[in-house]
Length: 232
Image (spheres, rainbow, N blue to C red):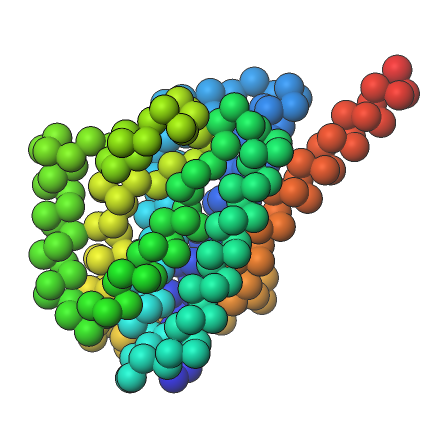
């Protein structure tokens, strides 16, 4: 099956915004600029948009990647890669920000969502109804934001650099599955559009970019600060 350019654009847009977000975050972290990132007004909404695009793409990708029968080897390889990447994120955060380490961020969520939702990828109606139930449960305050991590709060930091809780975020990949079954989306509205090479590449290598961009940014800004300090 040829790549869906609309899906590629969604994922690439999330990647571009994520890198921009983290550049601003890192500049703030090192004291080069002063912003309210990541929890200030406007920044939370921008992060929510980025995460939403990522998770919609995750659900849609499950449909396109396993459109026929489930290729067990491909599926297990994807889970293994995501699990290793999640572990790398956790270990890196324990080293860099031990007081706010990441125990269930975007990659951890995607790993669990892939494990669960692959089996309902052919059930768009079930998925959209389930997604609505998740949102109602969250916004109706039937389920707290930090469910089920509140059960282990004595072992977890009071604040974490990245938290993607099942409620409400599970709704997004569920909606992504439903979206990938819609005829207009499957016909690929952007099929005749030539995406910039960097966007097409970033969509294909989104996991690699996710893992590498922050260490590169952190190292670059640290070296910049060291050079500035030594030159004073």
